[in-house]
Every structure is written in C-alpha cells, then in structure tokens.
Amino acid sequence: MALQRVLAVDDEPFNLEIIEEILEDLEFELRTACSGPECLDMLEEFDPQVILLDVSMPNMNGYEVCRKIKANPETSHIIVMFVSARGSVEERMEGYAVGAEDYIVKPFGQGELTTKLTKLGQMLLEKDILEQQVEDATSTAFSAMATSSEMGQIVNYIEHIGSIDNIPALAGALINCMANFGLSCNVEIRTDKQIMHFASSGVCSPIVLELFEILKSKGRLHEFTSRILVNYDYISALVLNMPEGDADKHGRIRDHICFIVSVTEQQLLAIQTRNELREQQQNLNGAIAMINSKFKGLISLLDNNRKQNEAVFRSLQEQFENRIPTMGLDEDQELFIYNHVDEAIQKSVARQEAVMQVKAAFSEIESDLAALSHKVDEK
Image 1 (cartoon, rainbow, N blue to C red):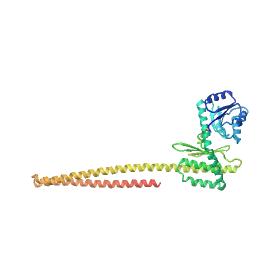
Image 2: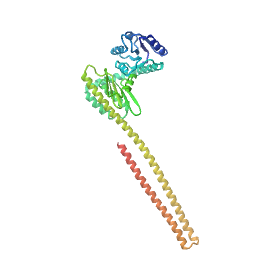
Image 3: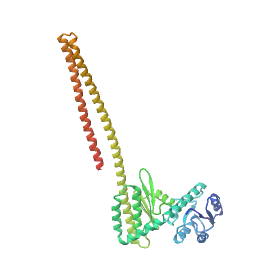
Image 4: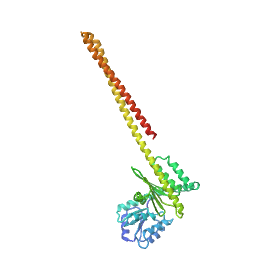
C-alpha cells in the first residue's frame, strides 16, 4: 500500500511544528508524539507505517524506542527514520544496529525530507508486491534445508552458478542461496561501469546503501547485533538475520557466507571476462571483415588495370601489324618498332605476375586473420 500514516516523535515542540509545516501538503495523515513512551502507546491505535524518531530525548532516547519497536513482532514491520543533529558513522551504524531503515540529520530542508519519505513510500509498495514471493521463497528454502546439508547447499550453489552468464541472475542466485540457509540479505555488486543493488525484499533501504558506501573499504568483515557485512573487491553482502543463541552455528554460517560470497565474486569475474572476450571477438570480426573487403577491392582494382593495359597493348600491336607494312619503312626501322612493342608487352606480362604475387600475399594475410579469429573463439 502507499504511504498513508506517519508518526513524528520529538521532545521539542518547535521541531514537530517544522515537520508539520513541511509535510502539510502531502497526502498522508501525520500525528506527533513528545516522548518515547507516548510514541509506544500510540502504535496500536494509530498503526503508523513510518516513524520520524528523534534520537536525543530524555528518559527514553530514540535508540531505546526503536529497539522496543523492532523487538515486538506486532510493530517490527514499521519503518523507522532517525532524526538527529548528529550524523557520524558511529551514530548511523548504531541506528542501523537497532533496526532503523533510514537516517536524516538536522537541520534538513523540505526537499530532503519529502524525498526520503517518497523513497520509503516506494519501499512499502515494493514490499507489498514482493511479500507473497518472499513467503514462498522462505517456505521453499526451509523445505530444502530439511533434506540437504549445509555443505550440500553450497556444492549445489557452486554447480549452479557455473552456468550463469549475467550479473542480475548471479545476484539472484546468491540471494536464493542465502535464503536456503534461512538468511535475508542485501547485495552490492560493483563493476567498472556501474554499481548494482539487490535484496531479499526486492529493494535496499537508504541506510543499507549508506553502510555499503561507508564500509566497502573498511575491511573484510563487520558484525553488529544479528547482522553481518562481508566485503570483497567487487561484491558486498549484508546478512540481516544471523542465527542467535547458538555460537557454533553462528560461526559456521558466518564462514559459509564468506566462502559463498568469495565464490560468487570469482564467477562475477568469469562473467566479465567472457563478456570482454565476446566484445573483443565482435570487434575483431568486424575488423577482419573490413580488411577483407578492402583487400578484395584493391585486388579487383589491380586486376582491372592489368586487363585494361593488356587490351591497350593488344590493340596497339594489331595497329602496328596492319600499318607498318604500308608505311614504306626499311627493315631496320620496322625491326626497331617491333622490338619496342615487344618490350612494352613483356613489361605488361611482368605486371600481371606482380598482381598474382599481391593476390597470393593477400590470401596469406586473410588466412592468418582467420586463424587468429579462431583462437579468440576458442578462448
């Protein structure tokens, strides 16, 4: 469903007035609360879809409120956007650790807040569309877990991705593999041309995108509460629901995730290499076709010139044979003319032989290019 109900929570009435003024023209119901307990008391009756939650409040701060909201199965689905005057990496990570989906730093403008709410509204729509698909996938995943070991799942995954030749399909396979372990995750794939995001729920929340950006160069592994983020050069995976209460299982699943992401990155590199080779092959084939066309055109031009020269000399020879006897020349003069005509004809024959040599050379070049193209195909 579209965004219909928003709850703003702040202990400063002036801040609530600013939010009301910014959002007064938007088509959803806005209510306000002045404290954490008041916010919690309103949840059942108002059932907000998004909560704009101040971090610094007396008695119960925003982190405590968010933790209670996310711990309650009846309210854990509510999207929480922290509103704070501080926006350090540590504070954003703490906000995400307690379950928030977004974070906005005071003072903010009208455009910034409305843009974030629009994106959160889009998240609600996409989550509704994908909810049934996620439920079906989860059911299938747990059924598979009942009949296959964890290592069996990994082996099946490795065998499966070997035949994948495009990045979205590879990301989908990775998410499905995580689902087979009962895990929900977000994935970022980085190539030279673009950065792509994929999620079990269909869309990555804004705070997840910020975490990918902040932590991608900060080391291989980050763990906070029930979440774990694994970084490789071209792939980052954020798992949202690591198993709790069983340290052995937690460590085993963590190792599986690192290995699975590593294998996925190798397949990503293989896909990129194949795509590059395919592009090189296309370029090479185009170059070969162009060179072959130019060679044939040049050969045709040389051959036509040779034929024209030969026709000219034959015509000249016939004219001399018909005219010389009637010109009253002595024998030495006739012999002089005939010798020069024969010499010119011999030079024409030599040019024909040169054309044949050029043809042979071009044929060798064409064969070499065809052999090169075949080698690239084999790779």
